[in-house]
Amino acid sequence: MQENNIIGDPHEPGSHALRCPQCHGALTVVQIEPIYEVDNTFNPYRTVVECASCSYRMVTESYTILGGIKNVDGQYVEIGSWGPTGSRMLSRFKYTVNEDLLKNLKKTQELVEFLILNESVVQIIG
Ligand SMILES: [Zn+2]
Image 1 (tube, protein in one colour):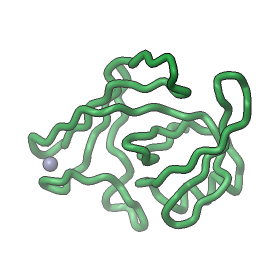
Image 2 (cartoon, protein in one colour; image 1 turned 90 degrees about the vertical axis):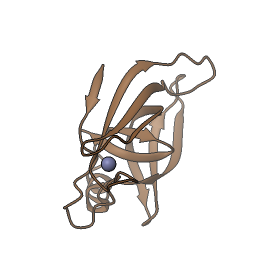
Image 3 (cartoon, protein in one colour; image 1 turned 45 degrees about the vertical axis):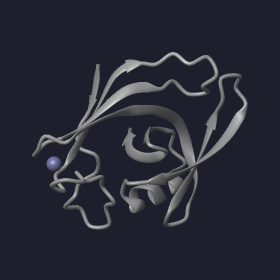
């Protein structure tokens, strides 16, 4: 069980951090167990999203992608990664992480893991 703490920092300027829909508190993402899907390129995990301040709780799926940032345009981020056969892939997601962080990663072309939840990049695991 892998716990990824608070997504972004709600107090950080420019942060699009995920907030609790009920109380706007910070959300915690916990990846529970892998889901085995033959046809899925990525390895999804059954995932619980919980609020630190109230009883809000959501069960969903998430996965991580190892890659580098090709483009950030204010709404979407393009991530260059590799498929299971080693072929190059380009994926496009919305994001809730700090945009300056993404721009900086684009500049450095550093390879990092992106945590994807509901087709959005919600955390960068460096
Ligand atoms: Zn809450």
